[in-house]
Image (cartoon, rainbow, N blue to C red; front, side):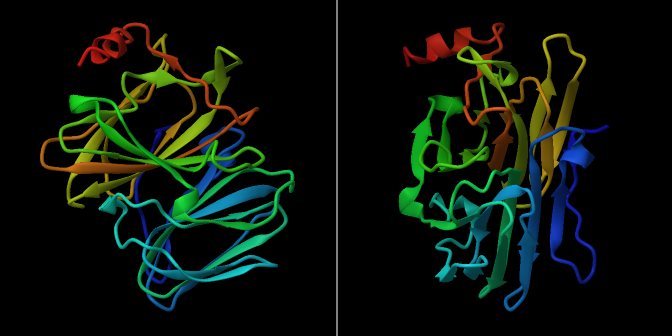
Length: 270
């Protein structure tokens, strides 16, 4: 099975991506993306999952069974380097998004116990930082990470400048061996600026039982069941991706590819 899910949108439908644990042949992460015209809406029943709806672009009204928020969304593009508005909903609830302007929204899913209340996550609650140096510089925004509690979901987004690399040096998180490493499935939802561009992502394991290099275009999604997963961006374009992770424990501890770990020490001297 290919690890690449291409963007697709049928006439009269808003959904552009859908990944379930069944379709990905794994246990934890689900994801769907929708593009709404002004006035359109979409409602997601959470079922046994907790869900974080990230307003990628545009302005919207949002609600769950008990809560409602009006006119949320503060960016018209994911490349504005502003943190997003998001809505968290526990299991056995729902999230409804009503588009005020054209809206792109991502629904990030993982198993939930219903231990937390529905809530709005504002840009001020997110953690925004720039990591790396030179061609390994990237801008990271933690949406539902250490900044906010949840049952199993981890959600963040990354902008990689033109000609740069991210998720690099290559790292993995596929072994349940805390405190050395944790097991987390992961999806990468890609956006490209300008949108006719592309980026590259490689997913590979130490024994190369998985070794797939993909050209990803705007709206494509890459599944990372295990292994290392770096991203490279061609000159003239910049890359955005939304990461969703979940596994047996809600803890992100990664292991670098030992062949490339030397780059970390070298960069400390730059």
